[in-house]
Amino acid sequence: MKRVVFSIVLLTAAVAAAEQQWEGDLLRDDGGLDGTVGITWDSQYIWRGFDVFDDESAVHILADLNLFDTGFGVSVVAHRAFGREFEDLTRVDGTAYYQNSLFAGEPYVTNYRLGYVYYYYPGLNEGESLDLMEGHVVLSWPNLLPIEGLQPSYVAAYTRPGRLDETWGVFPSDHEDNMTGWIQILMLDYGFTVPALFHSLEDQVIRLHSELVYNDSVSPYGDNISSAFSHAVFGASTDFTFGADKNIVLTPAVYYQLSLEDTVNTENEFWVSVGLKYEF
Image (cartoon, rainbow, N blue to C red):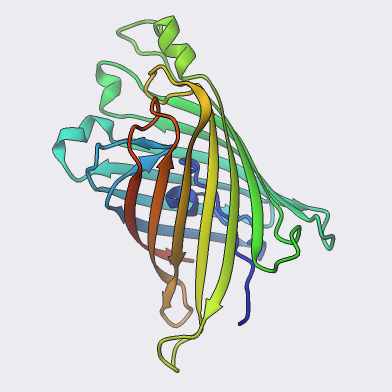
């Protein structure tokens, strides 16, 4: 069975498995101006271990533009619950990033990404603010391990409050402190192929994903969070491509979160995701 190297992509955000597809492919280097637009439905929106919309399903709309001959790119993602109860928690993420590679041709070739994200809550800013700013670095090593298709990655993200709320004037000190700090993620991905269901189709690529997250007492909502390994995520996904240029991609996925720290999430979580994107 032919194995393939899984191209790791960042999730910022969550940087959870379900969100990694929004932030660009670290291994694409074909030059020129390329982009992606898409929409994804999640049965639950789990972000950095938190159940954002309290078991409510969510939709995410993506626009990503990559200038690969420079390594720079920008993306915008909007997250919204289907229920009106969580309308105020609608969030828009704006990201600017640079990605490249070091040590080409070596077993320790390193793909890296440097990014800045602003998390904007358009509804909450009328009376209070949950805006966040984040800087992150993503490192991945596609050839480091002896098993082809098995790829380790590491993410370090530092968050702090965004703009100050005009009503409060300043954040309460404990609120600001709880939104400031590091989240670190160890990831391991494995990509392999299985025979296509029909002879007219290409072999199917299956991607398995796992991550272990250390939260250094950071909450996007200003809550008191313990410094600990907060959760682990396991997932599986695949792509179905359509169109003459194979640039329409349907991606079903399933994920399971094992919650290790009750101050982040008191429950283990299971959710499914279906994404549709157009690449140009």
